[in-house]
Image (cartoon, rainbow, N blue to C red; front, side, top):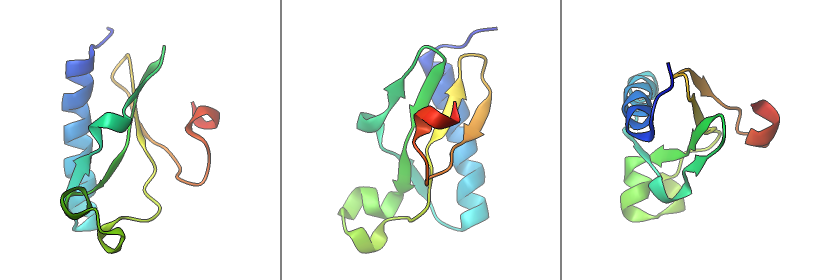
Length: 87
């Protein structure tokens, strides 16, 4: 079953909650960087602190974007390669 953008954002929220618990760092979505493709959505995120302050010292390193397919599948992408290569 195909999902819409609203459902993709809900799935992303669940994934970021999981990643936040694993990392011990509250995470937030960089909404303006979201990319819609024919296959789904690419979401970028960073620490909530960085999103508030803009201070590079608060930024995460090595956090790849999250891809949510139109079927609702989640894939955390590698930060060291272009997302296009990984889909």
